[in-house]
Length: 111
Image (cartoon, rainbow, N blue to C red; front, side, top):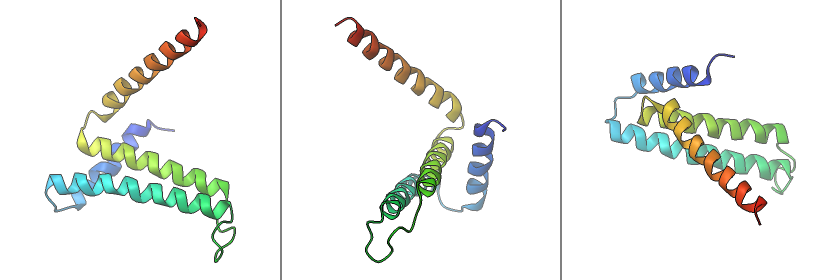
């Protein structure tokens, strides 16, 4: 598989090329798209658990996984549209998460 950030950059570029809206509106709509995709995760979970009386078991857990992947991709596209150095921004953020996690693990071990 290619570097996922290369694919994300292509997707973000196509979206940018397609839109005639001002940048602020493009970003706002991209951020709202994350919420839309998260709603599809919720719909898939409800369907996988058979909790919609009209639809029954309308989804599988594989569908839920796919919808979660769509949320992740949409978030990556949003970050890329906000900042072309999205991969570096994400890496820095992950380094903070790793450091915080290690601090918590070390703190728990010393108790």
